[in-house]
Length: 163
Image (cartoon, rainbow, N blue to C red; front, side, top):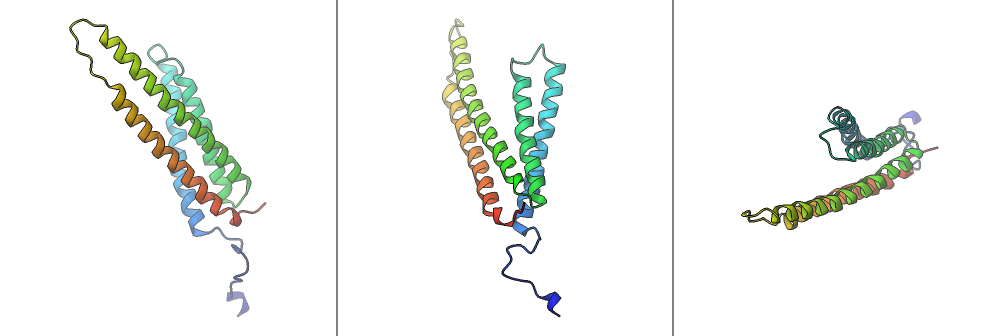
């Protein structure tokens, strides 16, 4: 009869908490798609290198690194290993830095496009810089908030992770 009683003093009784399971599954989906998208970006950039902007392959490689780190970290946390949180955190930091870089790049690219249109005689340039900047920064902030929320939720589950 005592085998049926669960020791409430133990944090997780060697089992993965349901919330950690949900977080890991969401990360498997999101980071798995990130890895797949990055691989497709690398292949596409290589095949169409003459038509792609400089640095496209590098951006895809960096995406592969941070998506891979987050995915591998989630796999480790699925197995209740503490090192998984560190890997996930490293991938998340890289993702935030890349997100910020992309937002700044979009803003400068839109400014350059507007200046090129203003040089064409008879064309009334429409200022897309403000709109593009607003969209870029809104999605940047939302993306960073999601990343920070996942890191915080994984951090709240660190007590369930062992060795």
